[in-house]
Image (cartoon, rainbow, N blue to C red; front, side, top):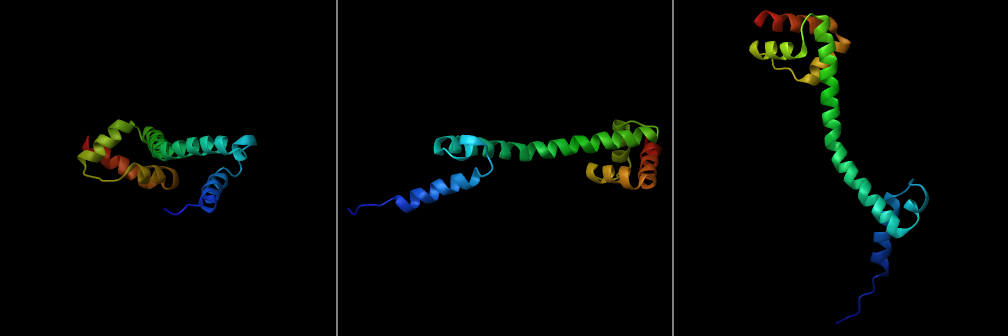
Length: 117
């Protein structure tokens, strides 16, 4: 069997790790074992936090909708329940944007929900 020389492939793998760790402080960007640990941990956090970001935005939208709904004289849960009864299918992102940018439109939607309760 022929001998396999690994220098090129090994250097390529190392460089990929070092490139991923660019900007890290101290040994986390210079020492191979520490770089591997730091990059693996960072990738785990990145995967996890892509899902957490969705949760955070949804809770932010709910807070904004609740604040606008209370100005209109109802609670968040009553607003959502009224919208379901009125067959208004708007997602929370759109409702939150309306609450911030076009409060009159949000107020008309809230009135629709209030009428169905």
